[in-house]
Length: 310
Image 1: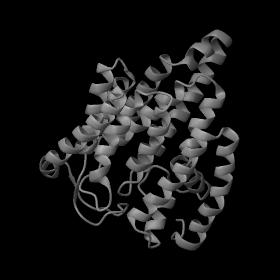
Image 2: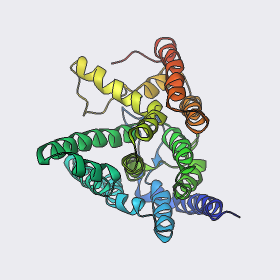
Image 3: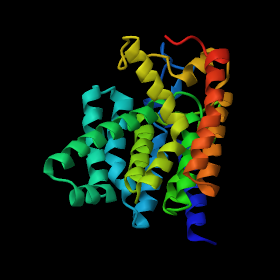
Image 4: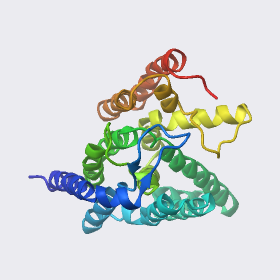
């Protein structure tokens, strides 16, 4: 049996069983109640992502893959935030620190050092840090419906694992959690889980060896990145706060418009899967074509199904 298939299955099982066994503990210490911006109407335990974070980090380290270990500090501050509701500045500082660590160990950093002067190097680094921070937060924002983030990230990381087998460890760990996060969910992953996945995505992105691979990885995650990006732009245009809690994301408004958690998650997973197939069997032009074909679907959902943007 291929060692990575073994890792995948073992991590999936351990993630599922440890999370299942911890639900009583999480319900006692990490229970969250529905608030105005919530898309759930029952008390639910959160911080379940600690299991796939821990398992994927341990097995990755044992396999000499340290990227998840570099993302652990951000995950820890996320789980602390799940419990104590920290000020945003603390989360932001840990996000920037994690991104700097990932960039420092990436081919991108080496390329910039070799081809740009001092001022240009740091200017580009600042832009990259800003974009990566936004990306981590966009991925965090999407963790608002049962199975949405865990399902789409499972597809994304499994796709990328074809060229980087170490990622099967993370993919399997996510799958184990997904069984408990699918609608009706037993547990949420919490900020510690969602920001970890965001950081892993940035780590993969910054490990790209060329601009084509970089662009393909961005396109692969476009269904869960474009939704929050457009929402932020629309709120800025309408002079609304992008910091205060709201229910303006398309996936939230689809839920308000009557679609179930399960159906919305399946839509995003389906769109991501189409991009996954074009990533594996096609090329960047096929991916762009798929996105062009997906735009009418998004417009239809926006106009015919979603509640009004506010």
